[in-house]
Amino acid sequence: MGDLLSESRIPGSNGAEAQKLSVRLYGRGVVPKINDRRGSAATKYYRRRAGQLIYSKLDFLNGAFGIIPPELDGYESTLDLPCFDINAEVDKEWLLALLTQPAFYGRYKVSAVGSRKARRVGVGEFLASRVTIPGPAEQRAIARILGAVDDMIRKTESLVAQLETVKKAAMTELLSHGLPGRHMEYKKTPFGRIPVTWDIRRVGELAKFSGGHGFRPPDWSDEGLPIIRIQNLNGSPKFNYFAGKTDPRWIVEPGTLLFAWAGTRGVSFGPTIWNGPTGVLNQHIYRVEPKAGVERLFLYWALWRITTRIERKAHGFKTTLVHVQKSDITDAVVPLPP
Image 1 (cartoon, rainbow, N blue to C red):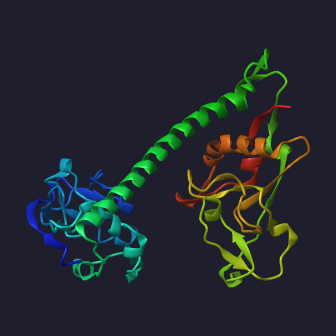
Image 2: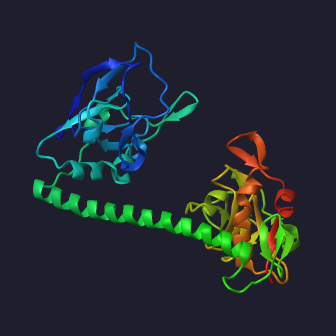
């Protein structure tokens, strides 16, 4: 890597005056640093130029690399965000794509510093990295292909965001007013106007909630049934396994309605239709079994709609690690159509 890059250290202003840079994770760009605590006048800052490569020593293992855009020319950073001039024969977009691949930054081990794990990779270690370099024409072709894929991803993410907005509007309409054109008469309720044929019911009247088992590290195995934890409800494909004697009440089959009742507000709480493999249910998650006359998928959306309200009742010893009581869920009320 040292044949491709040379470190740049152009002296900048003192810490109190510097316009500072921040590098996003996983190659998502270089941006101005916001909510910045002004550094002391003794802190050394270095001026950065458009087109230079920059990375974060602290977040190296999270792919925090970027190319400084023209609008941030002249912004500054400390040596925790080292900066490099790029050899003229190297295509910058190809280089950035290379560095932001897990196959590259995943080579480096995490070292422990004090009581926390520090993800720091210094300039010397970085420049000593060995990489395979195609010719300039092939670099540009690779960069064009990957750039087209990134552009498609950005457009898809924008479409998903628009669809989320449409979905929320549809939920408000359908879960409060019913199917368009079906109802002529409405009544006033805590949820606003709902069709006269609908009821207001406690969630506890609509379903039975049963908890999972408290699996501990000594219970974990490399084989057996996957242990379904909150991170798996949030999309993580990584499982611990349980190979011991299984209580049938712990078993979760695909299609089961679950509700996570502990974790981080806005992240961990709420209902999920389990679409993963058959497994055993960990603690902090309820199995939700709809009662007679209640459709499972309707109940999922009704719970989804009131999750934010349930989260407001969460409490714990940390703002990032909180839980709700069972009654906070079962005592909540929802409109119920026939």
